Image 1 (cartoon, helix red, strand yellow):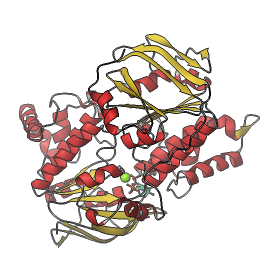
Image 2: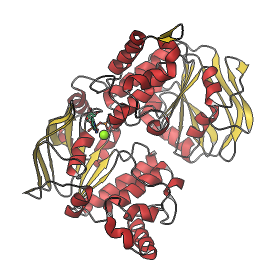
Image 3: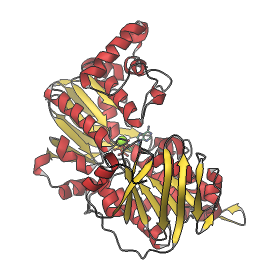
Length: 494
Ligand SMILES: Nc1ncnc2c1ncn2[C@@H]1O[C@H](COP(=O)(O)OP(=O)(O)OP(=O)(O)O)[C@@H](O)[C@H]1O
Ligand SMILES: [Mg+2]
């Protein structure tokens, strides 16, 4: 046995993150660690990787009791972790980020040339499409993820922990990560893999352990488990993994984009979203989907084209003007752009909609509390109370707050960029239910998603983008292949 955890407990002030964490991982296996947002997955792995220490319980490493006091300690024993939040230094090069650990002064004196050489060697060995001398700030999310992976494998570790490595990656980039995991496995490395993307599991995992409320509630071979059973272990109730859409009568056009262009990427985008409609936007990472949202929301100025809301052309040159036109934008990168990490949950939810929780300009605490409580319950936010700071929440729970913040405000057009990234299966269903409610009330919804099953089951129509252009339209319920085909191969129709 490579790693064994018994009765691990961890408290943060009044919050119990782990109460009974157990786990067994063998060399050469891929072990999935599953559970709802806030279940304690990242905390358990941070204890294994020496970033945090357990209050109670025992860890055996290769059969011997072990406690790692720092990530360096753990790395020397052969354990590395690829983190959920990027810990890279953006202004440094790929090579520097791979080898210059903040916790690791030993590389401080390595000559630049050798650093580059070693980085190149590592990159080549795994076949990453990276250049050692590039600045990390210039990389795509996928590129950054690969640097994180290189950092973790630089010591030739015998246990690698991936905390949601694919949540910001496209299909093809995800396959790349799978390829690396498979390579590690054949080299006898043990892999612990955390993900909320259920469709990934069968491709990659051997065993699965499920945490619920800080407690290990299930562990078995993946083959012995149906998807429904797995979900039930995670959320403690029956939830369907297949989304069912209610048919909503389509109303008039609420958002109309005509001939929108913005150099260098967006070219001649034409689209309409009707009241009551969920329009899906598919495509690979880098196809321009986020750029399209940013342009509509006035973050980036457009070179040409018009945006009409409810039949009127609106000049939208800033997010403020977009909000005034009734548009809400739930960003892809919610941690960085969507949230005030130093403020409590409640304030984050109501900040964008102060007008709704105040009377005659005076903030009503009871109205505020009602809004907070409603969203925290519906999205199953795991926190001590609404006064907890958002920065202290688990990754997925932060995402839920960012979504609640925009849902709480009155808007008639919603742009959702990857709405379910990092969110657990129970909350995903709830996010879709909330979107459906909005549509029923007459909102027009544009949803960007890299998760093909979501696009297919949730959207009424799907537009596919490739290299900044729309390449075609598909009906909801179409095949995954049809989307991939338009996303990757087909020539533009414009
Ligand atoms: N530094 C901290 N201070 C206070 N509470 C914390 C801290 N770190 C984690 N927690 C709490 O511990 C619980 C478990 O968090 P953890 O990050 O382990 O969840 P997770 O299973 O990784 O969830 P997700 O799927 O959302 O990433 C959460 O309720 C979280 O708010
Ligand atoms: Mg986590």
